[in-house]
Length: 365
Image (cartoon, rainbow, N blue to C red; front, side):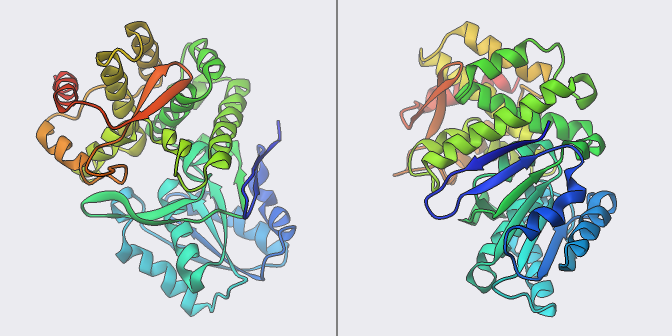
C-alpha cells in the first residue's frame, strides 16, 4: 500500500511518503535527507504518549540527537505566547541552522512547528509527521505555517515548506471519531474543487463517518487522492497568488465561525463543513450550480457526520463582520470560493451581502 507523492516546487521539491507502519521508519527516511545531527520533536500531551517513543527510538537509531517540546493541546493554544516555548527549547539545546524540527501531531502542532522552523535562525529544516486525518490530507502539505491572532485565524505566519512528510495511516486508529470526521471535511473539499471521480467514489461508500466504517482500500484512496490534489494545486501556485486560493473552499465562513466560538466549540473541519454548505447555497442562489449538486455535496457532508447548521446562539451580523478581517479580503471585498460543478470552483468577490445574510439566516434555524 506504500505510495510516494512529489510536491514539485521551483525552490525545493519534497516527497510525501504514505505507508502503514512507517512511523517506526522515520529515522531511516530522515537519514537520507542530509540533515544536521540535532532534531527537536514538537508534539502535545495527547499524541506524544502514543507515538513519541516510537518516533524518538527510530530517530536515535539513525544517529540523531533528539530533544522534545510538548505544547498544550488545542487550537486555543495556537498563539505567539505558546510558540515561545519552542524557541526556549531551541535555545536551551543550541539548535543550529542545520538542525531539524519534526512536527508530530495534528494541524496545530504542524502549523506552529513550521512557523517556529521558519523563524528560528531565519529558517531551519522542518519535517511533518501528521497524526490526524486533517493534517495528513491538508495542513501538513504545502508550507502554510502560522499562529492565530485573538481576532482572526492564521493571521501571523509564513510560507515554509517541509523537507519531507511521513504519513502512517495506522496512527489514525487512535484518532477520536470527531477528529476523523473533521478531516473528512477537507477530503470532501478536494472532491468538490478538483476531483469529480474521487467525489463519486466517496458517494458509493455507505458511511464516511468513522475509520471502522471505511474499507482499507477506500482509506488508501482517500489519503492518496487528497494528497495528490493538494500537491497538484500547490505545485502550480506555492504562495497563493492564483489557483491555490481554491483550497480555501469552505474556509471563508468556516474560519469566522471558529474564531467567533473561541476555537473551543467548533473544530476546524466542522467549520469547513459548515462553510462548504454555505458556499454551496450561495453558489445556487447566484445560479452558478444546480440544486441537485448542492444536495450531492450536502449528502456527503451528512454521510461524514459533519454539521450543516451554524452553532446555536451565533450572531449572524458578527459573522459578516468577522469576514472583513479574513486574510482573503482584497480591497475591502470578501473573496469566496464557489462551486460551478462537482470538481470545479471559481474565485469571486462579487457576492451580494443580502445573499450572504439570507443563506446564514437559513443555516441558523
